[in-house]
Length: 339
Image (cartoon, rainbow, N blue to C red; front, side, top):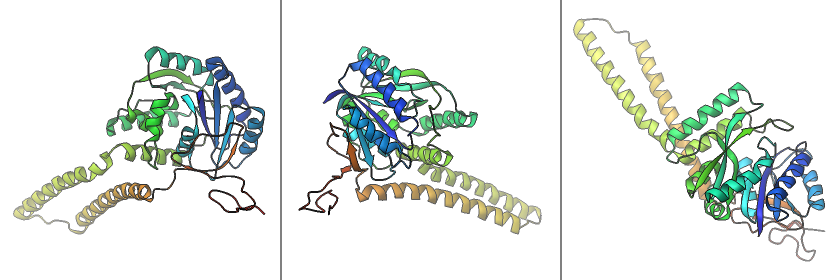
């Protein structure tokens, strides 16, 4: 067990890794001295990220590099790091250096002073982001706050400091579709905000294009709220009201002897009803799909290889395959056959 674990999921971050290693190491030493570990998770990168991680692990005994078997996605890569880390206190940070590592000592001090289990970063400003990104993020957090039953902090990402007991509570939640910041809010304990200014990405491009952002937002909404399912009842009530008005109008037109245009109004009603039905079925399918994935009970992640002298902790939510097999026992549990 170490005093501090720093968890960093990485996907195609070769340009950031040297500076990340330098700044995280300096921040950790400033906060806890030499009693820390830096856990880098390679989430199926297609550039030279893994080879750089291996080189850094050879030169730094406090660095553990974990190579996942494929791209699992940011939240599952983060889950792998949290599952395998061994620190009493855990810092979650992205590899792009938008969240300054130098804030670590102040966050630890805030945790001590407030006797909190979680110190979560709240973004006062977001440098280097487009107006569209800022507007959609602003709207997303407020929609999520209104729709969910859990009080999820506004403008807070995954950048946070956690105690070991908060982490153990988080690891007791084995669901596949993970929204870490919402899950941390759900576990409770004392959680305090830490306001900071988010910086521009150090190098490279964002790993969250619009499509991934929309998928992430929908996972968050469906994972912590049943509000989308309630749209069916709301839509049904609204359409019932409209149908009643239409019936009254038809009755009035019949009594008044007015001719009623049939085809246009009929097609309009059919299209509206069909669209609402398909939308509701799609929402139900999303929830059923989540249930299907959970029922399979697959490990949340698979580790292909680990680099570092200290090695990872015990996996609770995933599977760690052995990289080298004994020659007389090829193909054993988790082992790669050798000639």
